Image 1: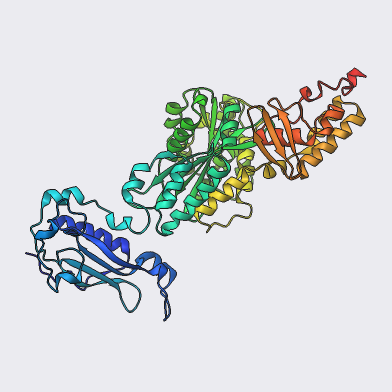
Image 2: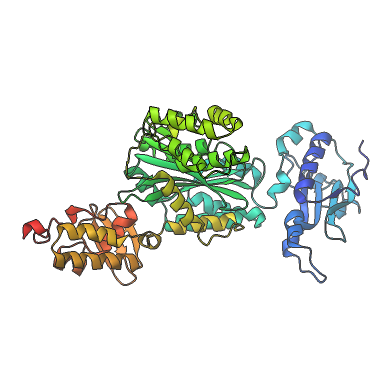
Length: 543
C-alpha cells in the first residue's frame, strides 16, 4: 500500500527532471496517471515580475494536475452508464472515477516545481498487463512539444516537405528551437521541393541532434563534378553546433558545397554519417570519386575505403603543417626561423629521397620528444599529406587554399550564438545565384577571350561578364533547359548553356550575361569555345 503523501514536497528544477522521476515512479508502482490540466508558463499573464526566460524554458508549466486514467476515457472497458454509482464529493474533484492524483506547482521563488498534493491510493485494482499496454517512457515530455514516439521513429530518416509540415502541425511549443528549425526546413522545401534532409533526434527527447541537408543544386553539382571531394569541419561556426561540409570542384576550379551536416558539438562518427547520407542522396557517385581530402581533425579514415572504394584519402597539407609547428613549439622547439621551412620542405618533398633528407634535417633541429611524436603519429600516414605520395587528380587545385576560402566565406558576418534554425537559413542563402555571381573573376575570363577573339567582340563579351556579376538573378532548371529571371523578364537557355532567348544573344550570337550567370551558378566553365561556335566572325583565325 502506498502512502498518499509520500511524494508531497518533492522539488524539481526542470520539467524534464520531473518527467524522468515520473517515469521511474510509474514503473516502480505500476500506476499510471495522465495530465488532466496544465497552465503553461509561456502563456501565463503575469501581474508580478515574470520568471526568467531560461526558467520558463526549463519548468514549462505553472500548474499541472495528473490523474488516474481509470474512467478518463483511456481505459479499455467502461461500466455501462446505468450501472455507475453516484460519485462521492471526493470523487467529483477529479475527472473519472478514481481519486488518485498528483498536483505540481511552481514555487513562490519561481525557480522550481513542487509536488503540493499527492493522492496515490487507487479505488480499483492495478492491472500490470494494462499498465504495460499504456505506459511509454517520455510520455509527459510529449505534452511539451512533439510526441517522443514520433521523433524516435523518424530519427535518422530522410524527411520530405510533407513530413516537416506534419511535425509543424503537431508542435505545441517552441521548445528547444524545434519549431523554428522545422519552419526553416519548411521554407527550404517550399523553395526547393527536390532538397534532401535527414534529421537525427536525441533518443527519447524532442531535441534535434543532427541535420543533413542537400539542395537540388548541390546534388546536381555533385553528380557533375564527383572526381575530387573535400570534407572538413568549420571551426567557430556555432556555439552549439558543428558544421561539416562536403565540397566538390566545378569546371571553374571553385569549391562548391554538395552536402551540409549540422551536429551538436562532440557528436561522433560524422564522416560516416555525412558520406552515407550523401551516397543515399546521390548514389551514382559511389565509384566515381577518385580522391577525398580530409581536415586533420577528421578520424574514421577506414570509412572512406568502405563507402568510396575508388577514392584515395588525403589530409589537408597546410593543416598538417600547422599541427606539426604548434606541437614542435609545445615540446620545446628552439625559437628558430628554420623550423617552419624545414616542416614545409618535408611536406613538399617530391621524391622519397627528398622526404628522407628533410626528416633527417628535422631530427637534427627539433627535440627528440617531437621526433618520437612525429614518427608515431604523422610518418605512418605520410602518404596522405606528403606531396610525393599524395595523388592529385586535379593538379591546379590547392586543397588547403580551397578549404580556407570556403571557411572564410561561410564565417563572414556569422554570429556564433545563432540558433540552429538561423544556421540553416544562412547556409541556404549561400547557395543562391546572387552569392555565386559575386565570385566571378571577370578579368581572368575576359583575358582568355581576348586571346582568341576579335578585339571588338572580346570587349562586348567582357561587358556581359561584368553585367553577370552585378546583376540580381533567379535561376531554375527545367526539362527544356534553364530559366533566368532578372526581376523584369525571363530568359530561356538550352541544357548545354550555349544559347539564350535574350536580344543580346540573338543579335550578336555571343555569350550574354544570362549564360555567364547560369554557367557560374551550375559550375560550367565560363571560358568555353562552344559559346562562339555560331558566330563565325568571333575568332581571330576566322578573320
